[in-house]
Each structure stands twice: as C-alpha cells, then as structure tokens.
Image (cartoon, rainbow, N blue to C red; front, side):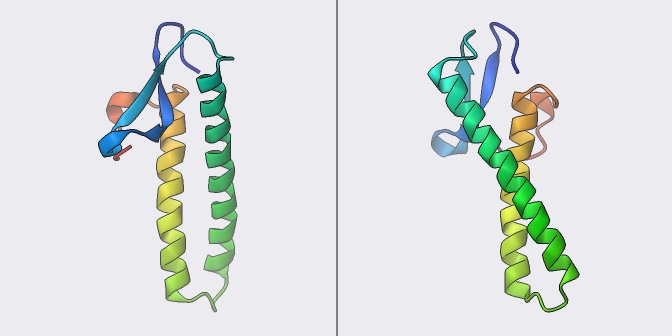
Length: 100
C-alpha cells in the first residue's frame, strides 16, 4: 500500500478519464476499503479472463468475433492490473506506458 502522507492511485478514473487519488492515512477508512474491494474484483476478473483466454486459444473452434471480444476484455483487465500494481507501489507511477 501507500506510505503515510502519500497519495493512493484509485482503481477508477475521474472526469475525462483522468486518474483519481486518495489522500488519507487511514487504511480502514471507507474510501480505502472501497478501493481495496474494487481492486480485488479487478484482479479476480483478470484471473478469470486469463483462464478463458487459455481455453479459447486451445479451442480450434473459437470464432474470430469471440477472440476479438476476449482480446478487448483482456486489454481492459490488463489496464486495471497495471493500475493496481502502480497503486500498491510495484510499478513507479511515472513509468505509465498506458492510459489509466
């Protein structure tokens, strides 16, 4: 998580798709817990999509439209996972190679 007096990147975007930050020293506050729960859902969704992708890629009968939709969903999930990694301090925020 973030150190005291640091801003936490939240797992959602604000107006104009700009990043949202939380300033608090209370990891048990409402917004901190909400962000933790949303991050957990995003990570679980990414794991489920990865399993779906592995199955679809192994299935020769998977049609192109399903693969495109899966690729789109995986892109969104990867964006969320990267945002979680930045928020938790596993990636520096200034190295964002993607749009949050």
